[in-house]
Image (cartoon, rainbow over all chains, first blue to last red):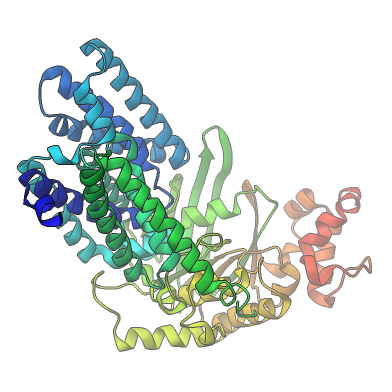
Length: 279
Length: 279
């Protein structure tokens, strides 16, 4: 059964793209969750709707059309946070609402919802093309290089932005780079899990990993493992039972979260909190 | 050590329409131990943020003779904020790793050297947190976290320590140890200290200068002059000055109540505000 499943070209491409996207989302997600910016994936995914609608309206690739739109929106979030001095979640909410409203408006002008748009909303991993797989690999390679060179700065800035600044770390630049990577991840992920579920792929694997891991590197590793396992099992189950792959991937991630929570409670239940060192 | 460590000239700052600081000018010399006091919302924390370049306002601030925007020698400065950055959530870094963040690395991605770790353990010994070195930082109590964060501020052997109400979450023993350590750093090693505090009673024996901020610079000078400043008398009333003076000299409130150990001099001023105004 599995060998038959793996023999299809579209399955191979879907699994490859899904695995690459899972790794990108997991690695980025760890920093976004710890910086309390995890909902930026949700906000930017709504902006994707504008890009997709524009793509369908102009008969161009929704992926290529979404990329500049989401990049501009991500920079918009940063500027709103910096210049207007409002909380990050409010800035994300503003950009998200604008993206969703514009997307709906353009879709209506284009003649309403259709099957193509439905695929982008809920994911269609098995329609991923070679170019998209290549793009995913390129973004993952760039992200790995970024993490390699700025790992310590990123950990320090995620832990305490103000103090990181007083160590000479360029916190604003790091944040901007993270958000630009997130916007690329969001665009690449909408075929894998769909616009509505991208943020779950960014949030769930890191949160599960944070419950179990004892070191920062373990969190990164475990988040990647959860992301990959969820994509592989999700695609396989959707193939076998003919169910939507995006939703299956996210539900498997939720299962990992519940299991991680139970393991963390059992493992730490008696020790950690009660064993807090007395001051 | 001699010379100006922090110079501020006509510093102004506003949050949208609310004026927080107006025309604040002062010069902190090397070896000074400055207690920054004033009412809540008077602009004390904002002033520290401006000194550290965390906020941008009008006027000029220099650190060791260099405008703060161009300042690069961050290892000369240790900073400890009012609140722990991760008091609520789990952040998977050990105490040792947190203190390491206080060192300015030449290269962000290199592993710490044996010399780096030696400095970390020195700082942990100084703050009596050596036994916590391998613990997860976010599993510690808030008071323990503050002591570890003080170690992080001290690890680079700073020439200037900037501390924003650091002792609020500490118990009486930790607070005494904390202020004794700051006193020793100042008197023995000539470390310049800027300390926002309401614990004027406890810290008073070490402080050499007071800075009273209430949107403007009400007073900056030797602590003995504080009790004779006409401007302070206009702001607080002569009774408040007398209370602070009495506490510093006798360690108890002239009204004979028992709250001096808890609140410090400004607690008394608040507690006896009516009398202060009346006087």
